[in-house]
Image: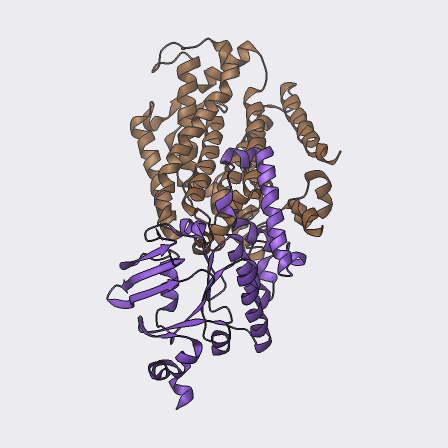
Length: 346
Length: 255
């Protein structure tokens, strides 16, 4: 019976969020907050794979998000909406509903291919040098989007029409549904990967890369996998973001500032802790909204809170532990991280 | 044919000649020692053989297959494992995970399997974990399988490092100063352990050690280097009486 608790919990959450949005129990504002929560969870959990589990320092995550946002956004507008640049829709609006996840996946794949380009120099550099490379990649992506993407620096609009067309065929909170599914899939993918022996090679690289390579871990392959996985999921988050309210994306959104925001969420939650990432993504999103009345001063208060946090608890909310490590009783719901316990005691 | 064949191995760090014209044939099943004063180039030789450094010149062959230029994890997969002078375990991982990850070369499942946790994945992971636990049990470490390595005592960490090396299923093990930092009692246990793994796992062992008690008791053949060059080779008795060795290395004790 035990193993059904978690799926049941997820299902209840899904019904509550999607049902609530559908029946307009949550107004548009709360739906927006929920959407950003989901997107932030995807971004934080995926960056945690590189910055937390692998111990590298990638500070260009928003760049990959931007790649996903533009690829998915342009593709969906080209396929399903009347647009100045692309002309009439290529496919009938009814197909938008089943093809929407495909568009998101294409955005993710595009971002992960760009991630491959970063993984290659990461073979030779670590730490500060890799941070500089990823920073450079972030700027390159922004400049390429500004100069070559439709809309240029003004940004690209039109995704709203796609979402409206989807609502026209069948009214449902489509974006929220796919954000929820994307978030759950991201958590499952990263959790399963890092709990496999293949994925534990990622942690071995963090702990001692030379020992990992000498003890039969193919460090290049593992790094490529981790980078592509992480960047691909950031691209997925970008695709979801592009279809958000207003349906507007702008290269200026995907700069180092956004990357910093994602890193803050990772370090706030704890490096190498999935539950920490989820908690901090939800908490940080809420904090931004609670402090909204402060206007610009919110960017004084939030960094201050961060400084306090780093002084009081430098390893983040969860450190490198999971909720199930701190509250062993939760294992009844979430299952044990170490199924091998049983084996060891035999 | 010898198991390991090293010919004219030479390595420069910039202008510094760390290893010069090093030759060695290791026969299957041998236990050979490598000694020399500090900075003689012993660990460099291990690093060259395992692929951590690429030699400036010379060749290294395992069973006749060239190893020079292969990446370290490939060389490990060919059957050479090692331990390190200072312990290099993965501290924030459990003892079991340390040993499991050393099986990485044998993983056949794909990335997709590792994400979906399919049947093939389950089967392979179970096999690797079972083997790892069996290996840990053979060295009295099964009880601490779930312990984080950083919480283990020093002597136990040394043992975990040897178990991790064995997990790669080697035919040749390079031990880099395994007795460093051990007390006389632990050194005695270590000598027993080395003899035991050699017999139980049909291993060839090549060992760097400063503790003469270890070297003189367990090695069948000893090679002595100084400033990167071989100065003597022979049985422990021959080495002990070799004037060159006494001058370079044991001198202090004799005079």
